[in-house]
Length: 241
Length: 241
DNA sequence: CGGCAAGTTGAACCGCCTCAATGACGGTGG
DNA sequence: CCACCGTCATTGAGGCGGTTCAACTTGCCG
Image (cartoon, rainbow over all chains, first blue to last red; front, side, top):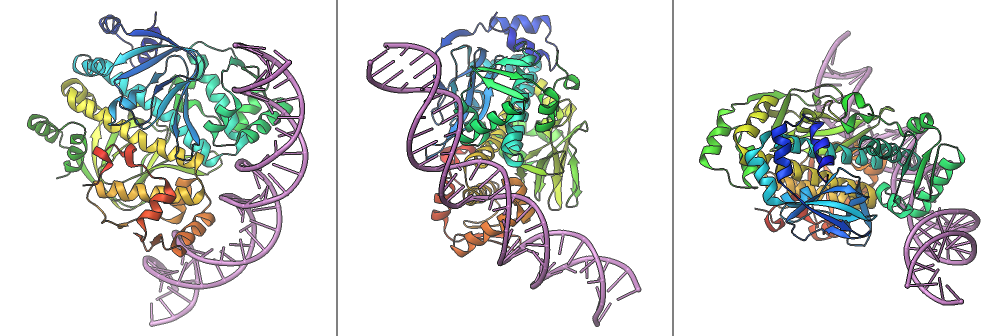
């Protein structure tokens, strides 16, 4: 069921009623399969569609005039994509797939309809956006006030949590489609330095990032390094399921 | 009229009808005057109120366990404060005044009521949040991919735009209550280095930051340094009034 | 087999940090 | 009224974290 992820997510704000769930099902969104490195939303090009990621990895980012890239957030299954570009006159950022992805497509019209007819879902929508914003804010803190090692540890911990919240990944490992260049652009570092940081984490027996897979060897020291507080992910007591 | 700023802001998404304007007026929010350095929202302490800033400067920020501070955004008149803390189980950030401020207070109940009864205002609300998020994203890019000089130039340009959009500040100057420490914590720099950057900008005859006032001497070179694109502020053609 | 994407490593450099000292201003109490 | 203190700004010196440039490896796919 393509909408399961979304319903689960919205329900973690306030549980959806049966009526609301059947309403959501009538939306009947288009389901798309896209390759890796496909651009779904293009910075500056007006947009009529938004998406929910069903499987795979994507990211949203901004390109600077000098060609450099800053990744704002990685998107994992269950995440909304391209809501902000729908609301603003011109999208302030781009969204691209990192791995092959399956996505649900929604129209701007459907969202306006939800706001007219389903105020409780609309409020859950606002919450979902607030939660995404909280993640971005934490990334900002990461760039502003943590060292390269701490940043990397923090992002890895966040990804572990987020993936586990949607039932992907185990206690101490997850599949990870990111390249070292992706990490560098997300963490405001050079790809050379990210490489050295990953080596350090490996040598200290804290974490291994290899072959599209992250394995955490020492969760305590990792959390310690990162100074990770899961509050911003807004789950009850910050607990995992 | 305490709500003028908010109505103007929401109207720039879709113009409010007369009925909507009179609805907003019935909200009759409490008006408060607060000193500088007063904490309105406290990271981790649950919150029942949100605010609109009517006059003065505030900021939202996060504190790290080591005592360091990262300012996420400066707030100027017309800006919402503390919406996200209302939606999340525990606020992910704090909000404090920087100068003495006048603020309007809203309750969580009122916002839910808007969502039930005024879907168009609710949608404008979502837009306002998207616009604030776009600003935060631009700050993230600033930290991740620009040098100290560029960051500072960018922030100054942004503040000039935002203040002019609410009728404060002239073509090339604005009152600015920020200290160099505030700037440092917003731009991910040390206060020592911000001081040197400001000196450089002054010596190059680009911009003067002095006596709680910013004067821009050379707008072209400033915009050039900053690589500033006002699109993310989401005004028609990025134009000033 | 050739070519490209991704990762790895070394060397040299520099942007920004930390530590430390000092100056300027305004408010407060003796 | 002035001495004192706290806040904010300024400047120098030295050091480190991260960048840039460049070379080389490894694995995959056509």
